[in-house]
Length: 176
Image 1 (cartoon, rainbow, N blue to C red):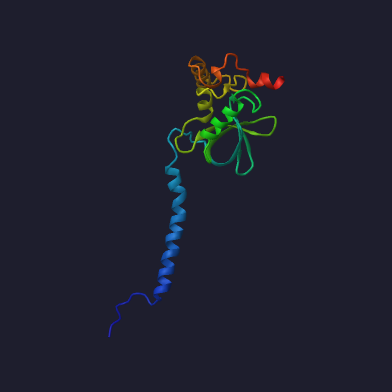
Image 2: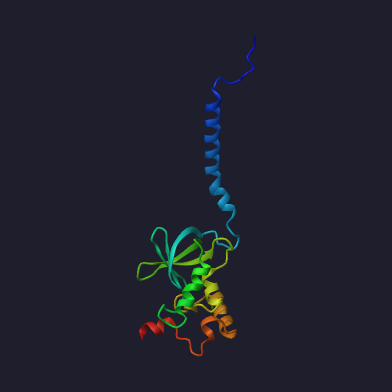
C-alpha cells in the first residue's frame, strides 16, 4: 500500500506553522505598506513621527517627549488675542503623526522643524501662515518666499489674525 501524504507532521502543527509564517510576512510587509502611503509632496529627508500633544500654536511634543518648534513662524501666545484660535488651528492641522524635517535646535533645546501633514502631505508651517493663524518670522526664515507669500495672502484677504485692526506680533507681546 502506498501512502500519498508528503508530510508526516500532524495537521495542527502544519496549521500553526502556516499561521506563524503568515504573521512574519505581515510584519515584514507593514513598514513597506506604510512607505507607499507617504504623500509625494513630502521631502525625502522628512522623518515620520508620532505626536503626543500640541502645547501652543507653534509647538508640539512628540511621543518620545521631544519638543518641536515650527520653523519660520510665530503664533500668538495663549493669553494674547487670537492665541487660542491659533492653538486650535494647529491642533486641527497636526494629526496623531506628522513628517518632520529637522532644521535646527533653538536656545531652549527644542528641535526646530518643518512639519508636513502625514496623509495629505501639505506644509503645516506654511498653512498656518496662509490661513492667518501665524506670522512669518523673518528673523528665523529670512529667505522663505513661501512664508512671505502666505503672509501677504493672509493680510490681503484678510484672514485669521489679520482681520484685527492692529494685530500685535508675539515677539512684541512677549516684551510687554
